[in-house]
Length: 170
Image 1 (cartoon, rainbow, N blue to C red):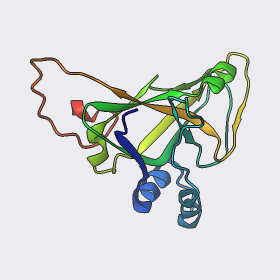
Image 2 (image 1 turned 45 degrees about the vertical axis):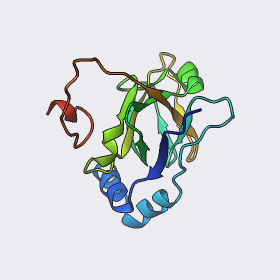
Image 3 (image 1 turned 30 degrees about the horizontal axis):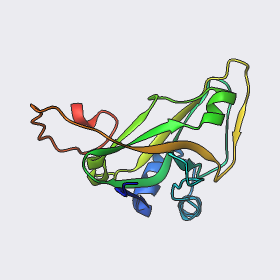
Protein backbone atom coordinates (compact mmCIF):
# COMPACT_ATOMS: atom_id res chain seq x y z
CA UNK A 1 0.00 0.00 0.00
CA UNK A 2 1.14 3.53 -0.77
CA UNK A 3 1.02 5.91 2.20
CA UNK A 4 0.41 9.20 0.41
CA UNK A 5 -1.97 11.28 2.52
CA UNK A 6 -2.98 12.39 5.99
CA UNK A 7 -6.34 13.63 7.32
CA UNK A 8 -6.38 16.57 9.74
CA UNK A 9 -8.90 18.87 11.33
CA UNK A 10 -9.21 22.39 9.94
CA UNK A 11 -8.56 25.16 12.47
CA UNK A 12 -11.33 26.05 14.87
CA UNK A 13 -11.66 29.51 13.29
CA UNK A 14 -12.21 27.99 9.82
CA UNK A 15 -14.77 25.54 11.21
CA UNK A 16 -16.57 28.27 13.17
CA UNK A 17 -16.80 30.48 10.10
CA UNK A 18 -18.07 27.68 7.85
CA UNK A 19 -20.53 26.29 10.40
CA UNK A 20 -22.13 29.61 11.33
CA UNK A 21 -22.58 30.56 7.66
CA UNK A 22 -24.81 27.51 7.26
CA UNK A 23 -26.24 27.14 10.78
CA UNK A 24 -26.44 30.76 11.89
CA UNK A 25 -28.42 30.02 15.06
CA UNK A 26 -25.51 28.05 16.57
CA UNK A 27 -23.50 29.70 19.34
CA UNK A 28 -19.70 29.72 19.37
CA UNK A 29 -19.78 27.48 22.44
CA UNK A 30 -21.96 24.94 20.61
CA UNK A 31 -19.67 25.07 17.57
CA UNK A 32 -16.66 24.46 19.83
CA UNK A 33 -18.36 21.37 21.29
CA UNK A 34 -19.06 20.09 17.76
CA UNK A 35 -15.48 20.84 16.68
CA UNK A 36 -13.96 19.07 19.70
CA UNK A 37 -15.92 15.90 18.90
CA UNK A 38 -14.98 15.67 15.19
CA UNK A 39 -13.65 12.24 14.28
CA UNK A 40 -10.76 12.00 11.83
CA UNK A 41 -11.77 9.66 8.96
CA UNK A 42 -10.49 6.10 9.21
CA UNK A 43 -10.90 2.71 7.55
CA UNK A 44 -13.17 0.30 9.41
CA UNK A 45 -11.30 -2.86 8.40
CA UNK A 46 -7.91 -3.87 7.03
CA UNK A 47 -9.48 -4.55 3.62
CA UNK A 48 -11.54 -1.34 3.42
CA UNK A 49 -10.78 0.97 0.50
CA UNK A 50 -12.84 3.82 1.95
CA UNK A 51 -12.10 6.13 4.86
CA UNK A 52 -15.35 6.77 6.70
CA UNK A 53 -16.40 10.39 7.25
CA UNK A 54 -18.58 10.89 10.32
CA UNK A 55 -21.44 13.26 10.97
CA UNK A 56 -20.47 16.02 13.42
CA UNK A 57 -24.09 16.30 14.66
CA UNK A 58 -27.43 14.49 14.78
CA UNK A 59 -29.70 15.37 11.87
CA UNK A 60 -32.85 14.19 10.13
CA UNK A 61 -33.62 14.63 6.45
CA UNK A 62 -36.92 13.66 4.89
CA UNK A 63 -37.29 12.31 1.40
CA UNK A 64 -36.33 15.03 -1.08
CA UNK A 65 -34.45 17.12 1.49
CA UNK A 66 -30.79 18.12 1.38
CA UNK A 67 -28.25 19.08 4.03
CA UNK A 68 -24.85 20.74 3.63
CA UNK A 69 -22.36 19.76 6.33
CA UNK A 70 -18.92 21.19 7.01
CA UNK A 71 -16.94 18.12 8.09
CA UNK A 72 -14.13 19.98 9.84
CA UNK A 73 -11.73 17.75 7.90
CA UNK A 74 -8.98 18.46 5.39
CA UNK A 75 -6.47 16.14 3.75
CA UNK A 76 -2.86 16.59 2.72
CA UNK A 77 -2.27 14.45 -0.38
CA UNK A 78 0.85 13.92 -2.46
CA UNK A 79 0.75 15.15 -6.06
CA UNK A 80 -0.63 12.61 -8.52
CA UNK A 81 -3.40 11.54 -6.14
CA UNK A 82 -6.88 12.77 -5.20
CA UNK A 83 -9.56 11.86 -2.69
CA UNK A 84 -12.85 10.68 -4.20
CA UNK A 85 -15.78 11.12 -1.79
CA UNK A 86 -18.61 8.63 -2.30
CA UNK A 87 -21.90 7.86 -0.53
CA UNK A 88 -21.93 5.00 1.99
CA UNK A 89 -23.26 1.86 0.33
CA UNK A 90 -25.83 1.06 3.02
CA UNK A 91 -27.30 4.55 3.17
CA UNK A 92 -27.39 4.72 -0.61
CA UNK A 93 -29.15 1.39 -0.83
CA UNK A 94 -31.71 2.04 1.93
CA UNK A 95 -32.41 5.75 1.37
CA UNK A 96 -30.95 6.54 -2.06
CA UNK A 97 -28.72 8.88 -0.08
CA UNK A 98 -26.67 10.77 -2.64
CA UNK A 99 -23.90 13.29 -2.68
CA UNK A 100 -25.22 16.23 -4.68
CA UNK A 101 -22.11 16.32 -6.88
CA UNK A 102 -22.28 12.52 -7.31
CA UNK A 103 -18.60 12.04 -6.40
CA UNK A 104 -16.60 14.71 -4.63
CA UNK A 105 -13.10 15.26 -6.03
CA UNK A 106 -10.60 16.61 -3.51
CA UNK A 107 -7.43 17.61 -5.37
CA UNK A 108 -4.02 17.68 -3.70
CA UNK A 109 -3.74 21.47 -4.02
CA UNK A 110 -7.10 22.08 -2.29
CA UNK A 111 -5.22 21.68 1.01
CA UNK A 112 -3.58 25.10 0.45
CA UNK A 113 -6.79 27.07 -0.22
CA UNK A 114 -7.85 30.02 1.93
CA UNK A 115 -10.45 27.78 3.59
CA UNK A 116 -7.66 25.33 4.56
CA UNK A 117 -9.03 22.70 2.19
CA UNK A 118 -12.12 22.25 4.36
CA UNK A 119 -14.18 19.34 2.99
CA UNK A 120 -17.95 19.84 2.87
CA UNK A 121 -20.55 17.22 2.00
CA UNK A 122 -23.95 18.04 0.56
CA UNK A 123 -26.24 15.05 0.77
CA UNK A 124 -29.81 14.41 -0.36
CA UNK A 125 -32.29 11.80 0.81
CA UNK A 126 -33.68 10.80 -2.59
CA UNK A 127 -35.89 8.03 -1.22
CA UNK A 128 -38.87 7.39 -3.48
CA UNK A 129 -40.68 5.64 -0.60
CA UNK A 130 -40.77 8.77 1.60
CA UNK A 131 -38.37 7.27 4.16
CA UNK A 132 -36.98 9.73 6.69
CA UNK A 133 -33.25 9.40 7.34
CA UNK A 134 -32.12 9.92 10.91
CA UNK A 135 -28.35 10.23 11.36
CA UNK A 136 -26.69 10.24 14.75
CA UNK A 137 -23.58 12.20 15.63
CA UNK A 138 -20.47 10.13 14.84
CA UNK A 139 -22.36 7.93 12.34
CA UNK A 140 -20.56 7.32 9.06
CA UNK A 141 -22.19 9.37 6.28
CA UNK A 142 -19.82 9.01 3.32
CA UNK A 143 -16.44 7.55 2.44
CA UNK A 144 -13.28 8.84 0.85
CA UNK A 145 -11.06 6.73 -1.38
CA UNK A 146 -7.54 7.79 -2.39
CA UNK A 147 -6.98 7.37 -6.11
CA UNK A 148 -4.04 8.06 -8.39
CA UNK A 149 -4.36 9.79 -11.75
CA UNK A 150 -2.27 10.53 -14.80
CA UNK A 151 -1.91 13.53 -17.07
CA UNK A 152 -1.45 13.91 -20.82
CA UNK A 153 1.98 14.37 -22.41
CA UNK A 154 0.93 17.82 -23.62
CA UNK A 155 -0.36 19.00 -20.22
CA UNK A 156 0.90 22.46 -19.29
CA UNK A 157 -1.36 23.34 -16.35
CA UNK A 158 0.15 26.13 -14.24
CA UNK A 159 -2.91 27.51 -12.43
CA UNK A 160 -3.02 27.82 -8.66
CA UNK A 161 -6.15 26.82 -6.77
CA UNK A 162 -7.82 28.99 -4.16
CA UNK A 163 -11.09 27.55 -3.02
CA UNK A 164 -13.36 24.70 -3.99
CA UNK A 165 -16.64 24.15 -5.81
CA UNK A 166 -15.68 25.35 -9.27
CA UNK A 167 -12.71 27.46 -8.20
CA UNK A 168 -10.52 26.25 -11.07
CA UNK A 169 -12.88 27.86 -13.61
CA UNK A 170 -13.14 31.27 -11.89
